[in-house]
Length: 411
Ligand SMILES: *Cc1c(COP(=O)(O)O)cnc(C)c1O
Image 1 (cartoon, helix red, strand yellow):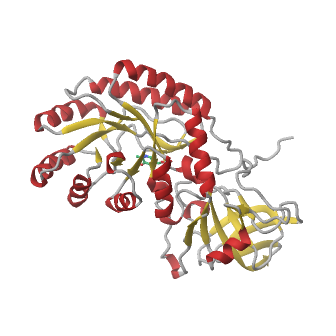
Image 2 (spheres, protein in one colour):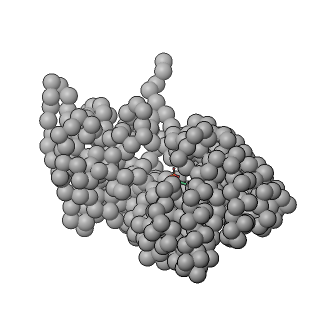
Image 3 (spheres, protein in one colour):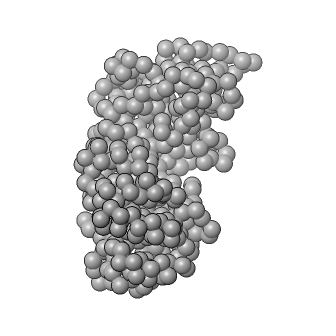
């Protein structure tokens, strides 16, 4: 008999005997009192530290670890991450401000993203951060602004590779893309950078996101390395920085399992060894967003009403897709599936029932859990959505329908 697929165990969070989920050592109901409102996002700083420590222990020492802060730009979290990783990757002047405020060293910040406006490039130059250039226009603009401001430009070229990341939730390279510069036209641009006398530091490749297949990630990293090696031949300046991307996924849906890091670490070790010979001045970098922060975060919303409609139980909560678009299935999912959900103040072995968890918005899209078996819950109980440390509040339409906003805390 086929058993239906289940969620990976969310055992990074422990429970007290009475069923209270513990966040940073605080029982969930008490945390809700401390915050003074639901809904909220809570990220456990101990879990953030643990994730970085475990990853560093697995990876070769020479690999630099960057945090892609679009995954979660909460200032307190970015400030903590800045102390744990080797660099912060920003994708707008707004994120740049948060990273600088957080105390990140400008020498360790890189700025990627298509369509950088002139003002953003001026800000990047003034801050002294590395710019991952995404078009010939950005090169010309940086040359002019560098002259105008009397400040050196630090340039890396973001490459749109001639391959795709297989099995990726979101493809961001290969084929026609708005990201990066097509590998085919890069030699020309490298020559132009030399002619303009601009400082060239290296390459940035990012093939895609949310991948749970180690072998696909290894293949993309190998191909990225080889492409960069080929392209490096066209530059008079040495490659100092080679960002091989990331794409490490976390399990969100039934049947998904945690990524096996061991083969990726082995593959990176082999690439690092090659780089010592072939690109001796280059630091190898990987940039990760959700893998670093996603599993450490929860979204918590309170049950406002319990209804039964034609036999189906509905828990109506005080938050929904306006705070957590991804959990509603409307952020890049093709077929809606449930995130791992629990009742955070009841024992998981309590009497249970098949439940719809919905938010208060007047749209059927506002769905947080569809026919999930959960402990029977009442108004006042706390619905918890796991795997919510990335692409949460900042990736959700908070203004939609005019409900109160959510709070974000680091515990
Ligand atoms: C979004 C993004 C990331 C982070 O992706 P995750 O799936 O959160 O790891 C890293 N690099 C670039 C260039 C991105 O656009």
